[in-house]
Length: 132
Image (cartoon, rainbow, N blue to C red):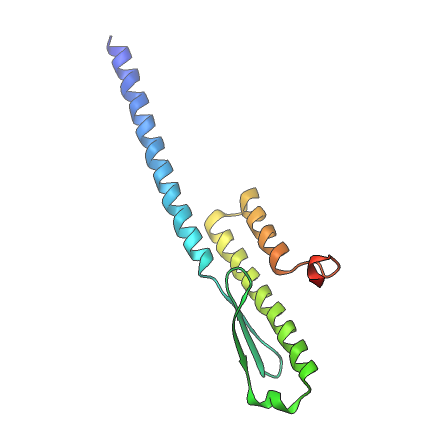
């Protein structure tokens, strides 16, 4: 009878440890998700006339234009905004990669998250999605 009680106690301890581990992982996942949602990327062009900030999804959330921008053609300004937005997305991807690496390490799930962000933030210039 004692062996059965000991086995039952051991099983109960393993279940408690497993439950605790799951709760801890859930809390870590929640914190990781919150951190990822608050990441932003920012970039300035070379002459510092355009500054762009994107949110964690790569969408433009802030655009600052220096008054000097008025001295150039609108087509050049538009190109600078697009190029600086791409640089801000690249900055965001660097931050995502660092955060994922620090949190999840170098496993397959970490690489999958980074690859997902990379495909959304830096689409292949030859794809149909890039032309929309």
